[in-house]
Image (cartoon, rainbow, N blue to C red):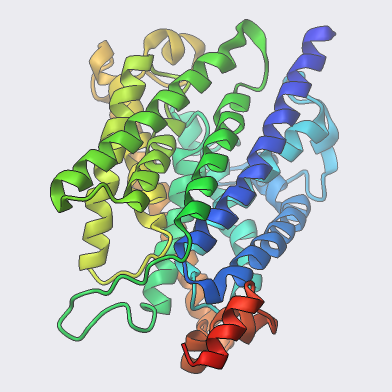
Length: 422
């Protein structure tokens, strides 16, 4: 009885930590964008998390964990329903809340592709449809008894389910919304529309880093053998390795230890280790983090050259690093942490051959393709029906704070700029 209570307490603490990650995203996104959009970013995060919560209660949980229909989607437990029953010793409400905050994180990642140019109404509609039709399907395939899980797909805490899914939706949005005004020149070169506050960005990353201990650590769903400590250790090592790898690479490339790149390296390490944190040894976590940090730098450069405007770097941090993190278990998964407990096979470097790597690659392709295609279709229909997804040129120039909400996030600074013509 005492163990059950401790399990529930640990998972609900993890829930609080994951919800606190939304505060990290607010600071990260606001700091990475311009002052005239800061209030909008903070406000839209709160109301979209609220929307995602209600949609998850209504249909999201049921689509993920309801009785499986051919391995594609769940079809029961709507409006909480039988979700109130205990699950693996956890209170139904504790398990439900933990799953809910994960769904909200995926949505927040997706909205990275909307930053500084999307209508508020586009956020509202897409929040509902993504939370009902995109995230739950991928989550069911891997975590809810679906077909990828049946094939042994390994994703301990969501490199694919949460991060890659959100990033593919962000990619669809960036393509349809097109770049921000002034981002690219006619000759193909890009301009640096720098964020207004690197301190906010750094604090946001630190909050996300701490929240990740709940994200990964509480995905053990219990306290038995204190295995959550091992998961958190791997998480810490990968984040640290990712930050340093990204910093040194950009330092070599540009001659400057760029702060935003270093911060994105830490996040890339966190995203990369999320799939494998419960399956690999600490030395492998360091390697996974290093590669994640290196990949994110290259990916950021690639998307910029491709004229894909990604202000929050969601595609690189959550997408590219999410792909690497998903594949990494196919190389580094330890038999005692995977095969012996019935979750997939050992990795290539532990005698498992290419079996698990193949399953992981299948998960990347199918989950990524589904998230992108369905998100693109939703946004395309929204664009036609709603008369566009993007604010007008005049509204974008004045900023979404005033055009969408009627007030500035920094009223004294912005009104002062207006008076002086700055």
